[in-house]
Length: 66
Image (cartoon, rainbow, N blue to C red; front, side, top):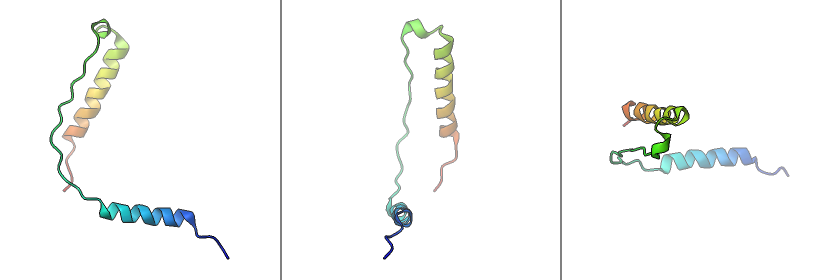
């Protein structure tokens, strides 16, 4: 006797879970970034802060489904 294919079972459970998840609207969320004053002129921190802002702005501007 052959054991059940675990990948099939996991895939099937994932499909079932996707169907059973209820979606609901979330309120807007304001994101603020705060850095210690000593980092204001640090190029690495400015780059990272800009990257975080750009990423969140792209997500905010993306059209929502449903």
